[in-house]
Structure formats: C-alpha cells, structure tokens
Amino acid sequence: MTEFEKIVIGKSSIPSLIITIILMVALPVAFFLYWRRKHKKQTNISYLIAGALGFIVSARMLELGVHYFCIIADNPVSRFINGSTAVYVLYGIIMAGVFEECGRHIVLKYIMKKNRTRENAVLYGIGHGGIEILAILLPTMITYLVIAVLFSQGDVEHALSSLKITEENAAAALPAIQAAAAFDYAMMAMNVIERLLTMLLHIGLTVIVYYGVINAKKIYLPMAVLLHMLMDTLPALYQRGAVPLWSVEIWATVWAAVIVFIAGKLYRKMKP
Image (cartoon, rainbow, N blue to C red; front, side):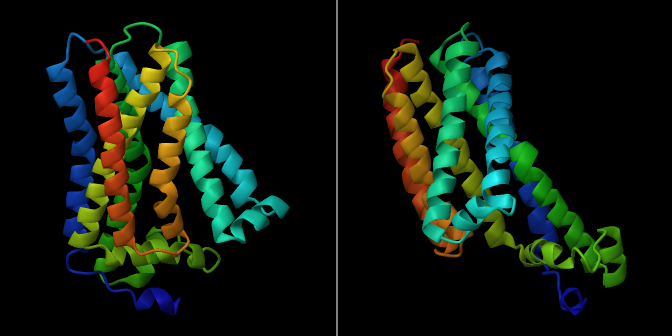
C-alpha cells in the first residue's frame, strides 16, 4: 500500500485535532449552561432531550433510510441522483430541509404540549444542534486524532493493522487518513466556526417552526424548510467538488445571520 507510506502527519495535526475536540464538546455545553442559567424558570430539560431525540429520529434514522435507497444502494434511482451534480444537490437539500423541519414541527406540535415557552424553543434548538456535534462530528474528529497519532509514530504497518485496514478496504479508508494528516489550525477554525453557525441555524429554525406551531400559522413550516435548503445548498455543492470551501463558510455565515434575524423578530413577538 504505497499510498499510505507517502502519508506525512503535519506538525499541527495532532494539537489542532485535540483543540477541535475540546471546543466541539465545549460549544453545545456552553450554549446550554448559558441559556439554562439565564432562563431557569422558563426552561425545562425535557425540551433539550426532545431536540436531541428529534434530530436522531428525523435525520439519522428516517432520512438516512431514504438515503440508503436513493444514493447508497446500487439501483436506477441512486445512479440517476449520483450521476448529476444538480440532481444530487437538489435531492440533498430537499431531504435535509423536509426531514429535519417536519421532525421539529411534529415534536413541537404533537409531543411537547406542556411548558410551551419561547425559551424552551431555544433549548430545543440547542439539543438538536448539540447532539449533531456530539454524536456525529465528534466521533469523526476522534477518529482523525487516532489516525494522526498512529501514523505519527512512523510504523505504517502497525498503523494499518491497528486501524484494520486491508487491501480490500484501503481505497475507502485513504481519504479519511489523508484528511487527518492534512488537518491544521485553519481546518480547526473552519470546523469550529461551521459548528457555531450550525448551532445558530438550528436554534433559529426551531424558533421559526415553534412560532408557527403556537400561532397556528402554516406558512412558517415551509419557510423553515426553504431556509434550511438555502443554507445547505453550497455545502452540498462542496461535497461534489463544485465550489471551494471558503465560499461555503461565507454562504453559511450569510444565511445563519438571515435565519437568526428572522427568528429574533419572531422571538420578541412571542409572550415571555
């Protein structure tokens, strides 16, 4: 496996990965502690848990089930979607917007009927965004750190053996190892900023959906779906190699600001 022998772990890879892991844990914890301390009487931990469970069910179970058939499994549908960047992006943003926002709407309208306060809507968003970091992105960063540590020791065969990499799965494993090797402080900053923006996105969209629920205004659910789709458009294009990473960060910042602005106005319109 000559490709693996050429891999050189950057000097900043291990420290930047360690800092990234610490900050990714600290981010949702800090959001929760701040909001809970500020609004203890108006918030209930059940909304934090509901946000986390809502994300797991809607995005990681139901949405992934559709993804398995439509883009992972080999069939005419998956070949059609994967064969076109435009179709792939449109499919991806629709699925993300519909599943996550409809999941939010269902939980807030039909399950969380007690303790309906605007402060609990924010807490729900913290749970939704927080579990995405802790259950999905954090394990990836920890895996990168393990890879970086193993390859930094200089024994490629030992590293491959420890990671259970064989001739059969080498091609699939190579991109992750290359990403771990190239990880640096710039990537650390981008990852942390992206997670901060995503946390704000989930909080803002939750407030928008919640406002529609308590005021019985149907327009706010499709608004949240559309905003979510717009936010995800450039990240989906980046996955296809169609746009550079810096453009994704600028795009995410703009739409996070738009969503937070709309949510802030709706939040102030709701009674404390």
